[in-house]
Length: 155
Image (cartoon, rainbow, N blue to C red; front, top):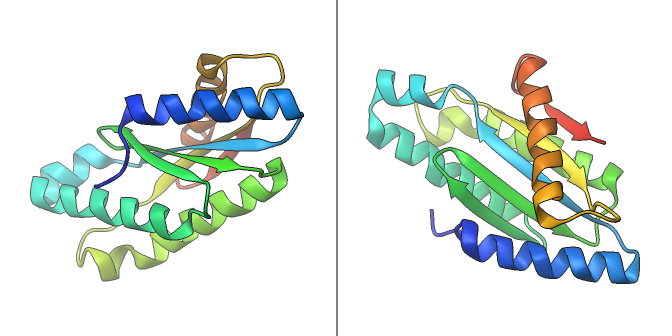
């Protein structure tokens, strides 16, 4: 996918969390999971699954502003660190990414439909990187429980 891995991303996340807490500024984290990835691999093959992952990575790079950091945590999990981003703006970014992926799915991977669920978390004021990731992860699972193909904001 040519995106940073978990280790590289965690280093960036730590820097941005400390900066945001020090300056009392906003940052947001998008935790993105491909819905029904196993079904894609089982029905269309791993090659199609890999193409979907590459397409998601390319989309995240396209939507990232200078200073934002998209990364792949592993498997079908992606994250985007949005620097200097208010929670309401993070929700708008998440929705634009989700809708773009849904609409572009058939063009990028003919015959393979896919969607993503997204959890959104703002900078925790007193928390750690682990707290921030856990909050975004809980928001992601809330989105999954709501029927998938949606974004949810964690508080």
